[in-house]
Image (cartoon, rainbow over all chains, first blue to last red; front, side, top):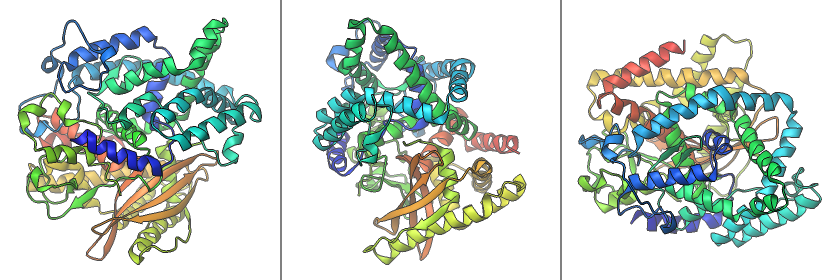
Length: 368
Length: 204
C-alpha cells in the first residue's frame, strides 16, 4: 500500500536530507498567522467536525483520542464538485471542498482586512535586523518541540543539532536573538508532530481549510495539538504568571511569518486562476516534502516524468513510475503526493488498481 | 534564514552567476547544469534592466522561456487528463494561452530585481534522459531559497520541464489550478480557455 511504500521512502530519504521549515511560504503564512488567533478549543472543535465528516474506515489519520463522535456531515452534500464523472475521481482528497472554500473566503477576508495590515505595520515598525533577531528568538523557543519530534522520528543526529543549537544560541546567542549556531554549521530545521506522524506512515486524511487556522488536515491538526502539549513553555509561562509573554510570542510568530510572505502570497494569488486550488496544492506538496525532508537539495528530491509513449488512459500500464503524459494524458494521472486515494470519498467506486494507488502517492516522491 | 519566496526564485532565474565544477558526473548531467546556468546568465543579462518597457521585458522573457523550456510538453502535462478531451482547436488555443499566461505572470517579477544571486550547485542524473539541477537563490538579506530544475534530454534536445521550489513543483501546482477550473466549468476545457483568456487580458 501507498503509505507503507511512502514510509520506507521517507525513512531512506530522511537520513540523507537536511530538514528545514515545515511549510512553504504561502501556506505557512496563512496557517501560522491565523493560528495566533485560534484557541485550543476552536482547534478541537474543528477537528471533531472534520472527523465526523470523514466517517470512513479508511481514516487512520485521526488518532483514537481524537476519534469523532456525534452527528455526521453528509460528504456529498458538502463537496460541491463530487460527482459521477469518471474524470473527477482523481480529485484531491478534499471531500469537504464546499465548506473548505467557504472558510477560505472568510480567512481571505480576514487576512485582507486585518492580518496583512498588521504584517505591513510590523515590517514598517521594525528594521530588518530587529525582525531577524525576533525570528531567531522565536525559533529558539521552539527548540524543545523540534527536539522531541527529531527524537520521535529517530533522527538522533538532527536531535543533536537541535539540542546544540539551543544551548549555543540561548547562551552565546543572548537568549536566541543571534543565531550563532548557524555560523558554526549547526543550521536550523523545523519539525512538528504532523511530520512525525507522516514520517511513520500516517496518511494526511482529507484536506481541511480551518476557520482562522488555515490549511490543514486531520493528521497535521492532531500534530498541532500534540505539539502544544510538547511545548514546555506552554506549561511554564502560565505557571509563573507569564501568560502575556506566551500571547506575545504567538502574536510575534504570526506577524513574522505573515511579514515574510507578504509578496509571495500576493504573487500566488495574482498568478492563479483558482486561488483556493493553488493553495491546496501548495500546502499538500510542501507538507509532503517536509515529511520526506526532501524540500531542500537533490538527495531526497522528486521529479516528474513526461512520457511520450503514454497514449492510453490506462493506469495499470504504469507499474511504478508515475508518468505525466505528454501526448495523451492518462485519466488516472494526477499527482498529489499526500492525497491518499483510499481516503477519498469516491475512491471505492472507482476501482483503481493498487499499483495506481502507489503511483498516486509516489508521483511526487520519485526518490532517486 | 530561508525565505520561501517565489519572487526570489524568479530573480534567481535571472542570476546564474556561477556554475561550480562538480566532478565525476556524466557529460549529460554536466550539460544540464550548464544549460541551467546559461539560462540564469541570459536572464540576468536581458531581463533585469529597470528602465525596460513591460512589453519588451515580456518579449525577452518569452524568447528565453520558449528556448529553454519544453513549453508544449509542459502545457499538455498541466492540462493533464483533460488534454484528451479537448478538440484540436482547443488544444492549440490552450497552448497559446498557456504560454501567454506564464509569460505575463512571471516576466513582471523581474521588474523588482534587487540584487539576488543565483548559484548552480549540483546536478543529479535520473533515468530516461532526465536530470535535476540544484540551484540556490541568495537574497540581499541573506536568505536562501533552494530551486531545483528538472531537465529532459529528448532526441538530443535539452529542455527544462519543471521547476521545484523547496519541494513544490510548479508544474503540479499549475496542473492543480487548471484542473480545478476545468472541473468547476462542467469538466470542459472551453471553460478553462475562457478563464485563461480573461486572466491574461486582465494582466495587460
